[in-house]
Length: 421
Ligand code: EPZ
Image 1 (cartoon, helix red, strand yellow):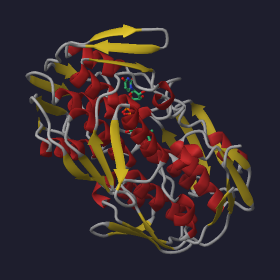
Image 2 (image 1 turned 60 degrees about the vertical axis):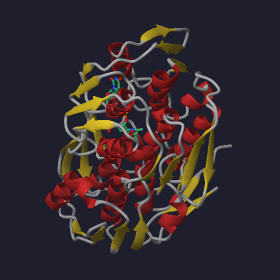
Image 3 (image 1 turned 30 degrees about the horizontal axis):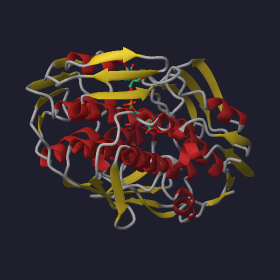
Image 4 (image 1 turned 30 degrees about the vertical axis):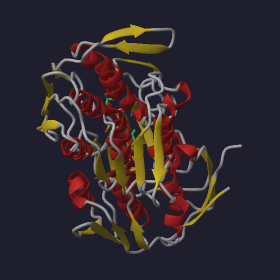
């Protein structure tokens, strides 16, 4: 029986909430343990399902993972037990693909099924750019029944152009190239803040990476990598999600702490346009009530554009804006399907096509029984439920707890009436 959230809407939302370490930074650090025989320490680690899966993956591959306190993980190398990624785990989270390159670089082969995780993206999320990159670095790819087998005696540096901007593609090939022979040049790279943060940590481990955070990244392969300690950057998507939550509730001052407002310039520019009152601090942002939210169209875009992971919460905000707004989701297929649940709650949303919806607001929302389809749509439904009249039930909350630690406690701290049953 899957767990549910029960949320009684209409409570004033105010107070302080602390942002956790970035999920999409954490998930790229665990695989680095496969590339060194020295220990790796990670702090500011969010205690969320996806991170537990990544830990289980390392243990299955022969590592020891211990906790010296909440959010502080020590990974030590024991012995490489196998080069097959456990299928049951690979299907639990998309970032499992990040374990492939390091195994290929250090063991010369790796077997894995198609990675799973979110249902967003056409069917299972494609990995063609990862495979093409590994082939360019000298790997042989065998497509088996429903898995892949990669092998390479020694990976060689290569020049790789990404036909589409891919965050994990950039991270995976940047990481793998650290142990390839010679120079790798990656072009048309993603520039999300998690990428320079990962490069910085790899460089403290002895890697030679330049240009991370720009479209061209140059990696000079080295013989081996040392261990190291990595403090995760704050989660910019959590920060943006809670800022939008405060703007939707519009019922009190909300202080969001332990964040890096510099990673969300696209959101603050949008808040200026739609009339949300916010005040940026060094590592905080304060959202105050406003008399009227204005509508604004958005087009999701790779960083530093408006993040696709904030599109779902923003769509909820637009149901409360006075007028029409067009939401254009350009990165993931199927990421707007959750809007039919907002419509069931009373929102006025027309799906123009699978990538575009038109929202007409403001609409009063009413409680419903809902199911969370993916991580970010799930939190958007939580936000909608906080202002809906009545008691909303959200099922399949594994999809939400994958990405938000202690959500019930933290939202309760803001005055929300939310329970997990
Ligand atoms: C990362 O996913 C994030 N996940 C996603 O966050 C985020 O939505 C996405 O980047 C875009 O910002 C992690 O970092 C673990 P992509 P990623 O490769 O890297 C297509 C969340 O909620 N593509 O940048 O998997 C792909 O289908 C998650 O935390 C190929 O066609 O996304 C998508 O349409 C959801 N072939 C586009 O590129 C490939 O080989 C961008 O995907 C790889 C990707």
